[in-house]
Length: 243
Ligand code: PGA
Image (cartoon, rainbow, N blue to C red; front, side, top):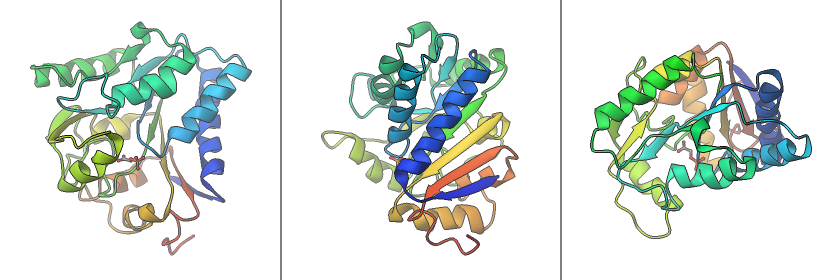
């Protein structure tokens, strides 16, 4: 794992955007898994602008969904679907056949997980995963205690995730379970970028990067990945002792 503490949020976002663009130039048929959330939003906006300016072709890549709130329809503004459409798929003009997201309304949850795992195998794995970190150390909806080698699964959301998740929704929304790729997918991705900014993430970043590597803090598993890049702003990195 490689760590870089940036001067500010814009600088870390620019580096993340550059990495996505560099991959697309090198491998236009890449398989991308880009998390939704507040943290990567600026990176995606810089990335889509660069893609337009430099006429980067995203038409051959595949987008894999990282996670989704179970029971929340794709047209709900708080859903991961909605976020990805608005911030990535629409600006880049991505056609539906290049997009594989979890169906959070499916009544066959196991089938939905199997379908996603099969897709990733058929696509020969994920080239680049961009993830954030939850206040409880989750990655996607790999909540504390998640299986280290797990693949797609449906999970009861941690109390912290249910509460913090309200920020994405216009009105109070019952968030009980989520569907997510597993930590096994993260370990097997050819490259992983974790982005975090702001003082509120400083303590969980310190736990993930400087305490034990343990599923109790799922993001700590990123330290076992040889091609993982953690990009922080100064605030998020402020409690690290070995800066
Ligand atoms: P955030 O979410 O980027 O909105 O802070 C991160 C996460 O929960 O993974």
